[in-house]
Length: 95
Length: 473
Image 1 (cartoon, rainbow over the protein chains, first blue to last red):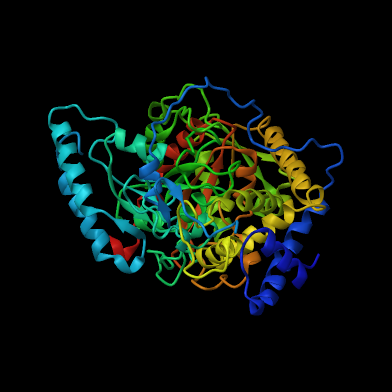
Image 2 (image 1 turned 180 degrees about the vertical axis):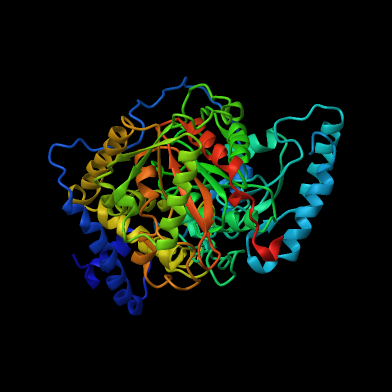
């Protein structure tokens, strides 16, 4: 199945990745080739097969509701592009 | 040698630091921290002297740049994280440190582990020490090149669809992908969470067992880490191949396989027979569906995992943008390379409204069929032997413009990840161009001991794992 130029634009919007208008064509052909490969899945009959989400058929563990990590806000925020007084700074969202 | 004090950790560490420095053109490393390494080596020598050493005390190692290392750059081969100094250690890092190893630095890799040639790295391609016009494989390409050129004794990589085994095969090394859940994924930058697994790239099965021992075991910080006892991998190496049944699927050894690779595998199988193993025919009838199935599951999970890179909490933020949404879109456009973007977009497609059943759900059903094929095959054999790759290392830029050709490299490796099984790639010969050929031994779930013992038996009677590329002897 082909991925059209408008598909590329929709996917880029959903994925929050800006794509240059000149690049849309090459993404459209590149992604279409990958999708052709993926469509080979249709050659396998999967009627009645239960899906396998994970290699382990186990239930996720629960743990006691206790704090296990210390407060490292300052250290973690030292990696942020922009922060101030314990807050992450982003462009203004509300006027 | 360290324990018998034939050489000190400082001497050994200096030796490898010097080799790293002399062979920078391979581009195997992204970060080298000589000062910390030497300080840790001095500490290790003190422990060795007073006999308080641990399993790996004084042994220099390098980690793929996907493992978080406190206070050190952890780039994942991406511009997105080219400024990211990790505030914490991955569990793998923590355990290797606790075992006394000396971290030399961080090795180059395909961006976010997405690639089979190490050409998608923001830090440039890595060269194969066997022939510098060839790729070292990927995504753990820097890790494999570093061991192959003897820039360090061993490294740790990650394998989502073959990223340990394929570069190990291309560089003439032993590469182990353990069972899913055996080694904690905490602090390992996530690509596809239901497939990712860390493992060693080494010169022998014995070294792989040693590193596995140091890293394996339960970690409450990884919800998929297995809470079971870790076997003693080293004594288990001595188990003989006598009477072991090795399954071989004829469909893996057909005419599409490179003739030199085929010859190398057949020769290795004869050696296994001479060591007492019995070959049995098995079928893995649906393995050809592995590639499309894998690329749906891996990319769907990747599109979700990589949504965390938004330019807010860490990583690259664009200089110029109009508003918050534009900041996300520009930061991600600049921070990710082409292959990563392609993969995120395909994963987004597979998960988007109206396509979920046709792609993600369909792939999960095929995943079950492939896992069942292995389960049935292991009714008839103790382990499975297969080629690691359809060819030996290809040339740089040969496949870089054709993602689909690149993906087909993983044809023999991805089914193992889908099923969550352990597999080890070992060198079994050289092709006519003197490039290494790899064969993988696949075991039932949690049977690392069995495949490592088989690899070790083979390595006791063959020279291939000791071969060093001529320019680096």
